[in-house]
Length: 157
Image (cartoon, rainbow, N blue to C red; front, side):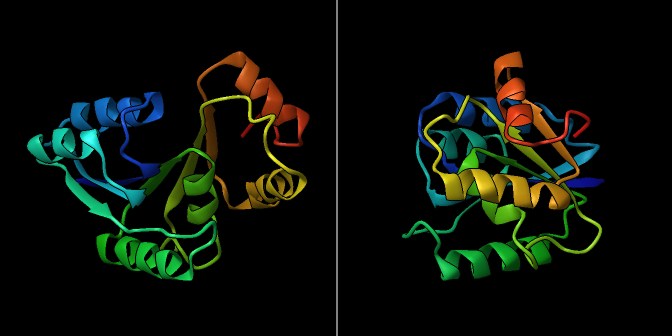
């Protein structure tokens, strides 16, 4: 069984959350053990995931950078021991790539869903700095991929 942890800021009723739910519930149970971790809060997709037998954890993130959430995420990943952590959206992508979060040997895949022209300089710098802690990055469109290449993310990632 391959263990996969999906990490996302919330389980609100939005596009990224819907795509995560479709992916998590579509993986064959005989091959994958799935856990979904919402950093901040649950939402409508929490029940959909739970009804499908997916283990869901909500960490209760309160601040932009919440040390308690860092600790809780680290504990969740260490107890679950996933082979793969796939995060979706900036907050989750940033947290999973912080030093000491994922167990040694875990593959980290981040997923970007939009052209984040709203990001400030420190956020773009964080994205670039965390590239070395990323095994793969997915984008849901060519424009998103081009945006991340333009800020220094290697095309081969």
